[in-house]
Length: 323
Image 1 (spheres, rainbow, N blue to C red):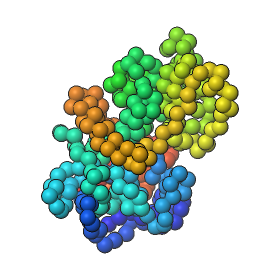
Image 2: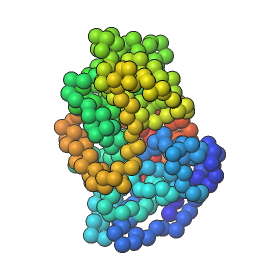
Image 3: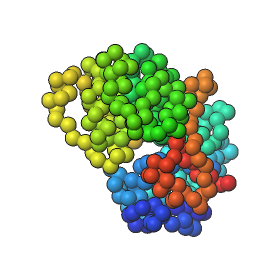
Image 4: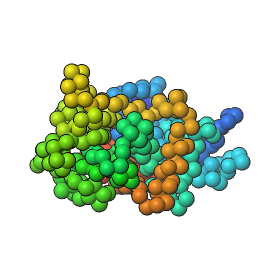
């Protein structure tokens, strides 16, 4: 089979190689999946650079999520979504995963959209509902709303009955957020989101802030968080991990809530199945629709990751592994 490998740490277009590897063989309790579509995520870029919190041994195949078809066994022919454990990621024509981790494709959902839903929508669900306990009628601030993580959070926030304020850079991305359903959109290139959030909430601030950016965005978010608000730490796309004096949350009565969604595999193994069932219901009801900004060939996966890192995309990039 063909698979991408990170053979040394660095920029994807410099260190990733498309190579021929032996077909993997499933063991007891495992299934072999033919990968049809694999979605790219910002952690794939960080993994290539050696900047992610997990560092698989070299060489490894990146890719955190995919949709495809079970090849062998009693489930042969079933369309599924998978999120395999590294070092054997989804940028490969075949992948072996534990059968217990295999999730169904929501009825009627095209495989590229199914592939694009796993990481961002599962993270969004666990962040907004389990960690932040978002309530109907609350105000949700979503940073980088036109990206894969942000676009999922906007839709999930609206589905939960929240008032959603989103930030985005430039008119095109602002319009993307509006189409996704955001009630208020801030162009951070020309506007101060702190002032807009305060105005939109009559000075109260955002009850939940969904921050995948970190750095200065995190610092300024603390200026517009509501009493008893929850600031979700999703990631650090800005490249700077912020620090905070704990006197500030004390004075303003808010919580800084961390989310490493992957840890639920260990602490609550059935959680992913419950999330997928909820997402399938939202898809059926027309409340979510994964945003795909581009579909690329398998041969172009490394260069697509570079574009993702340059903030030159909206939504998710999906790799057509078997075109």
